[in-house]
Length: 209
Image (cartoon, rainbow, N blue to C red; front, top):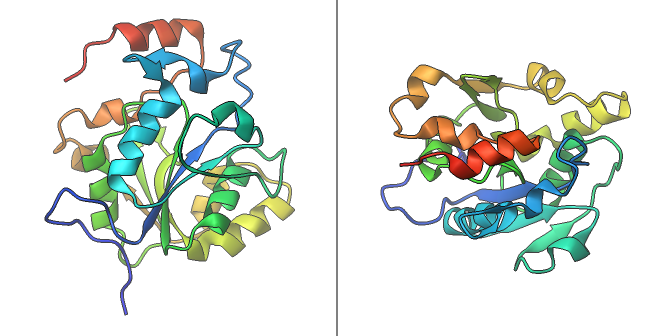
């Protein structure tokens, strides 16, 4: 039976998907915790969480410092393989999910667009991962991953690799092209994240639809 999530007629939660927020980066170029930077009157990570809880019945925060995010009403899990960066966060999120799929995002991209996520969901049948391609390239930290990826993720980590793109070459990956995304107003904002003080200043001042 095909258990892939589908685009739903209602605007309610997406079935069969756990939302996963990764909050494990060092924020070295920013000089402070990016997840706690303020935008629209709240921390970046809270803005992300508010969007996620409208889309998913279960939202998981992957962090090795759960006390920092105690203000968020969601489940937290730690890396099983600490020190491996985002791919370890993906592994922990997959392991924590009871659904067939997870949607994973980083903690510094506050303008995630629900319609982009619904598009990823709608084309997921027959694939192990669904990854959008933005103007900046492939976006593996704004993507859907099937739980059947878990063993492959673990194998990549055990081989000492950190790159999510290596994983995507090993599983059945559906890339959603910029041309497909262009049908969604403001889709490109989904991939706007911050790594430096200048990028943060630009994010705060940008006009958004």
